[in-house]
Image (tube, rainbow over all chains, first blue to last red; front, side, top):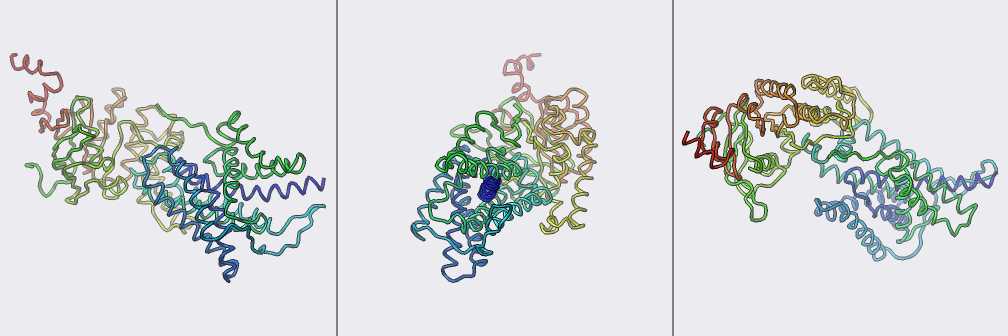
Length: 290
Length: 266
């Protein structure tokens, strides 16, 4: 029983990170139909920049904040320099551009920083908290809390604010959004900034547990993508549930089957979703009027 | 440009566009005054929708100018034109399919509903007031186009004719100075056409200029103050309905050159 609880804890922790990545996918997908495969690099950058700034002498909260701001700015730059000039190109081309961006960011990170594995201190110490025979790290609570706060924040943003509804309107019909006076270019820029910022936050929160190096982004991107697919691409609630579900499936696979198959779990989920549930758990069927 | 003077709201001057080597629209000029209904007619493929797309900033014209209230707005993006008082509908509908009818109409208030985002996030009274005003306005407009009872339905489930009217309601929510309507009566039955007919006349009477592309000739002749006729991308005639319908070039364009001969003979 305590064993199950332990797997549960570790599953929820990584699941929260995947949920944040999946939320990042969701925002950009909603605004542009593009699956941004550089999403994982934003997580990596969050960790790397925080480590660098902290090692350079900045206090941890300030280092974390600067990482989020810099990454968000890079997200905006990516949209302005890579996506916007190719606007009008088929979505598949845009997706391939994001894969290029991902490789570019990885390469740049190796050059600017290094190829070592890094970390920085956990926010509230390393003393594990004992719960019912299992233990959980205080940092795990930070990660889980972070995912929930971001989800709630996004929910309020999309349902209550005019700008949030403008993003939804843009995702629904770009031309119609322009007709009512919505600046869809700004909506795209905002989506990339938000998405990159959230990715960086995930990196900041997770690094004390998972560690960071220039090449950890792809793993996060694929797991987060699996989460977003499972939940239904484009649905924030689905991203949250899907992300946590992938984390749990992964932890259970590692615990009860073999930790060697841990990474396979996410791919099996992607395949299963595509075969049996192409719209995901919360996704809606697309109804295009002909 | 005999018709252009100080009261001109929209003036189109020598507008043209070429796709590859093909001149889809060539050197078209006309003017629209406030409260006036101007129709653009012509056979299929004459370039009517292309002309609309240039005026409303969807296409960049390769030549000519568009002026709105005296300011040059040639090639200005649609969302900026919306701010300057130009609103339009589409022949092939641009509706937020997965929103409700009411939500669609509310988006039309995007510009007037704008307030500080913090007020929205905290749901302050000002933000709620703006949202309520937008919803009330949207409901009134839906009633005006006869869609008030469908307000809560998902737009994607509505009939084509209803969506046409929803698009007009959303365009009116922007409180435009000029409204461009691309085939508002297409796909509508006789009763619906007459309703749209009345609606357009009513909107024009309130001082809004209307620029109309429509295939229903009866409707065009009934409600237009001025008609511009296009054929093969060029303006072949212009004038009030009576003049235009008697113009031999117009009859030829619609019925073929032989008809012109027999018309001339008869």
